[in-house]
Amino acid sequence: MSRQKEFDEAEVLDQTIELFRARGYQSTSFCDLTAALKVSRQSLYDTYGDKQTLFLAALKRYRDRGLQQIGAVLATPGPVRPLLTQLFQGAISSSCSEGNHGCLMVNSMVEMTPHDANVRAMAIAHARDLENLLAARLSVAQRTGDIAKDKNPTALARYFYHTLLGLAVAARALGERDTLNTSAQLALQILD
Amino acid sequence: MSRQKEFDEAEVLDQTIELFRARGYQSTSFCDLTAALKVSRQSLYDTYGDKQTLFLAALKRYRDRGLQQIGAVLATPGPVRPLLTQLFQGAISSSCSEGNHGCLMVNSMVEMTPHDANVRAMAIAHARDLENLLAARLSVAQRTGDIAKDKNPTALARYFYHTLLGLAVAARALGERDTLNTSAQLALQILD
DNA sequence: GACTTAACGGAACGAATGTTCCAGAATAGA
DNA sequence: TCTATTCTGGAACATTCGTTCCGTTAAGTC
Image (tube, rainbow over all chains, first blue to last red; front, side, top):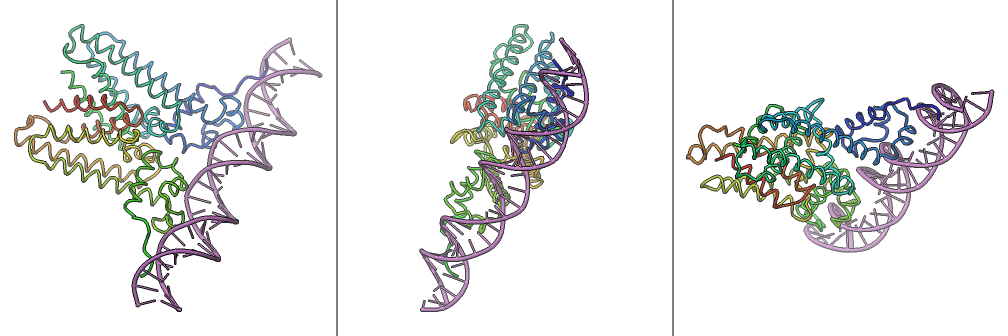
């Protein structure tokens, strides 16, 4: 063995996430990356490969982190409504923080899904994962009598997922955190 | 005067809309445009100016056409619920038709809003216009006893707008028309 | 001290892109 | 027929971008 890397790969990925989230894939040049990450061009290539590979790694990390957080929230026992409120508020907060950059996954779905098969596959899988997480938790809530038994957990899960997509776009383009929170609150009324 | 233009400017703009809607602004090169529109490069420049100007003209046309259609739907007298159902179905249908390209305005909001002040301004104005149209119609429905008086028309309008954003993104990235229609149906339950 | 690996930065390349210039051909009206 | 305007296509330009090559320096291990 020999010299160790001078930068923390995870930390660099986190900053990469923020850059791509703010400006999108195409508008973020490799120069932008090296400048912001303070890693030399060649080191970036050596460590992560080309721009697309780096982007996919960042997107994967972003997705995994998000799924884990949401899973943790939904794993909390007790009534669902406060959990879902927390989930929506977290999503809004994340999308609005540090300059309304929205959600990297949502942004990438819009920007890259037609061209890039990798991103499309990740987006579809992510949608399915989120819907499954939500549907499972809603089913539990149904069994415990927390929500009415005549509702369809899968349809509700997809509906909440679609709502989250809309909030992410609105956060990026319009900001207005309060308005988004109101909409989230309204969306949750469907459980009543 | 002398020789007349060989192409219909409006028709060219319509095709431009479809191209930008399918691939986004950056991924649509001027070569793509001239090839698809069957108008020579120079004629395009002479008629519309540069790429950005052409894009803005297409986006304006798209927005105006959409607002007019929605206005026409909402101007229909009678109960609101079927009107809103029609509106949602129309949006889903448009976003899913011809290969799930979504909505040009939504796509542009995500792709261009951070960089381009023109697009940002148009997006904000469009959101306000849509919300106003919806809120006005909901207020009417409230006065006629069509929906409960304790609801906030503005909040509902924004909520519906956010839902439409989400459906457009899902249409582009995931397709699944039936799922989207189910979500639209669920979103409308808030009026009950 | 030798070897391996990483960081760094300059140079360059090939491709794509938006845009302009120009000259020739075509078409309409005076 | 003359003239004005448009269409068309080739050529070229400047710029940006992703990427590679290469030589030098630095750090950690045997």
